[in-house]
Image (tube, rainbow, N blue to C red; front, side, top):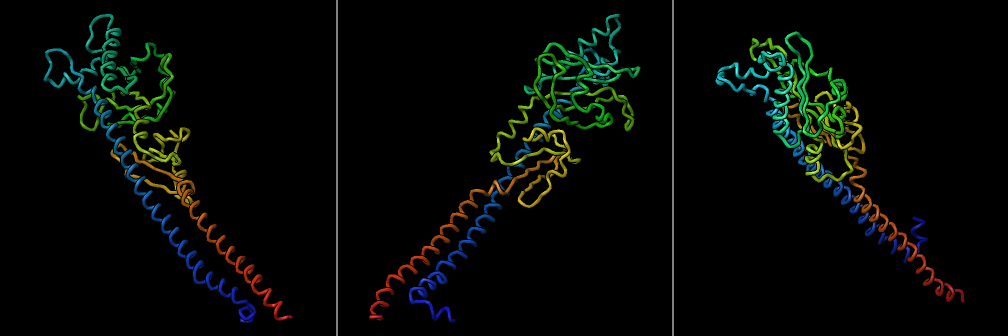
Length: 339
């Protein structure tokens, strides 16, 4: 109270303006800015959820087409009188096991026919760059066949197996198998990267539940096919996007070093980070978008801080001007009183 009595009229006037004008305005500005950031966050979540859903849906559509192509071994009919008989759909197994050939050059004939088959499969989609069939013969000895219209020389099965975790493939699965991005250095002069889809082929004469493994068809797909899906969605570029399976292994990402790695802990939601996850599709994949909110909301925070700076400056300017004005006005009055 003593302070109020000692304050001049102009100081009291300035304090009244600050208390009744600028401070409520400051409180209102804080409320509005926080509400604006929250609304922006909600809108951003919806936008990214829609984008992630679109990416997931597009990837599922793409894999549906390769799922159909990978089933071609079961539809590879023989061109003979057996058309319509179930054995006509056993044609590929007969080729792999050499049962169709009687001549001494049967191995060369088998290789030529398998190359024609792989050429036919590779031509089913313009993003396919190579097709491989790796299996076993009737003596359980390994056999392999490879074709690419982009290279005429296959360097060897060892390089092919070492380019990804070949031994980890489930030979009993009857579903589409997904292999993350890897180098195609097993073909001469073809250093492009690709991801691979694969399907096991079983003897259709086997009893139900006792499928006999014949081999696996591998299809190398240009990375451009996956990149086109991501480029069709306008992300800000400040986020990390992952295509992840149920085990947390990254099938594809815009962060190259994360592809093929397990990223379960890397996508947990923490303070200052927004994580959005889609539902898992039928191929066991889901989309994870990780965004740094400090980067996403930087423009809004800059605007809010500018607003606080202007209000603070206005308060300081009002106090300083009131003090200066009061002194200049009161000084001559004091002089007159002294005289």
